Length: 230
Image 1 (spheres, rainbow, N blue to C red):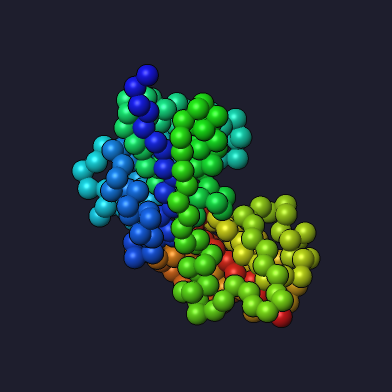
Image 2: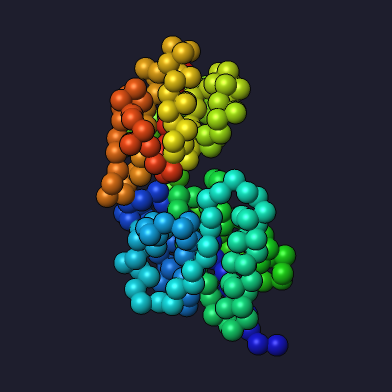
């Protein structure tokens, strides 16, 4: 049996190429094929972050629809896994680029699981999370002492329940729902404890020390809101 290639899920960090780890750089440079997630927008963020080390390597486009329809998402993940296995069968190694850290709400996870279940070797390289970079950009820390930290994607129906928890909170992937979050924080008298960074580390980064200053035009899928307990 011919030697199969190896899949490596590579976390590329939140946006600034300087936050790529040495392990990530080595994995990208060692790969034969670079798998790039495509969420349907013209911008391929993970690829742009790692472009310096990707060079002219072959690219494998992996559709990653950001939709609520689970069946549509899982179908895309299965197709991505199939395409990756096809490359691995040719003996070539694949590096799958993933924004932020693979261990936190990443679309790479189901692809990795399917490739491993099919009998292929696969590894994961961790990276800097978007919320770690956001806190640093805001000049603050996520938690200290005995403070708790709650990390969640913004889902409109869950916001009230989450806000009831006594903890510092990180709301990821807030997009347009950040306005509802802002209103709920204002109603609770917590709005002055909230900040936001959109597209942290990217050329179109926006920093808001006060969430109250955010408008609908400022909202982006890659927006992270930090809410500190009083």
